[in-house]
Image (cartoon, rainbow, N blue to C red; front, side, top):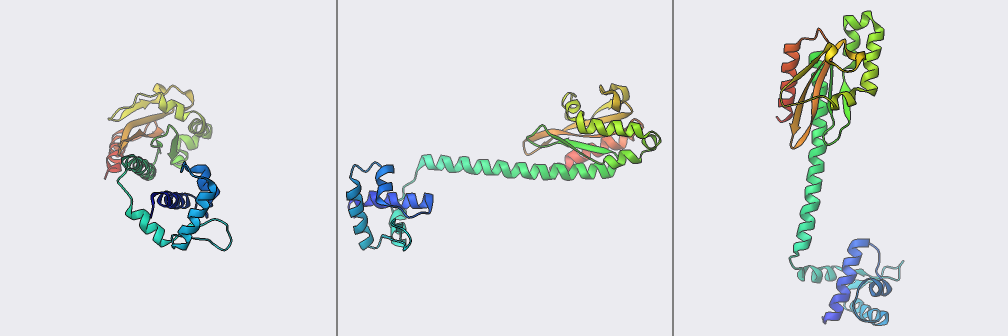
Amino acid sequence: MDPRKQKILRAIVEKFIETASPIGSKLIYEEYDLNVSSATIRNEMAVLEQEGFIVQPHTSAGRVPTSQAYRLFVDQLKFNLKLLNQVKEDMEGLRRQHYLEKAKERVHEMVAILAHTTNNVSFATVPDNKRLFYMGISNVLKQPEFRADPSQATQVIEVLENKFSDLISGLKVGDEPSFYIGDENVIPEIQSCSILVQRYNYKGFQGVMGILGATRMNYAYNMTALKSAIDLLND
């Protein structure tokens, strides 16, 4: 096959791969710099059709490649460094997205377990995101001090829904548990509570995980539970 027909056929194959629509000579003329007229492209396409490289679907004036065209296209493929870099970039993006979704699942799972284990509110920031979520609010409502003073429980819930994310983002959080007890909490509505926080790291995604409960919480148990939950993230 002469070089001109090869270029035209290659253009047809590439464009059909991109669009999945039959390709006409006008499109090839407009989008590919082949230095020939639209009529010449049309004539060459007629020859390519006679030779079995392209066919015309019944419902379109354009042409689509045959298996014979794909074979020729594949046999002429050469290693493309630019394409390799693009593929690596695409795969790295998909891998990071996969790990991010897995991190979200794991963190959500551990927060649920932590709330159930400690009978307190547990919370965490979403990996790769500043948004904070919490679980176990019913645990607070069951505590005697909050059952005795429902308004206090209501204040805690309002803080969780409206101010808690800002509070947590302002705390100093490290790789070991940190306690903020009673009036050490800067928001008056939750000075009946203590907060325990620690940084987590899952496959490069960092965030904060913690526990909120009454000031009489079992500090030793909760500290150990939080450390264990963060350790289990990577198991």
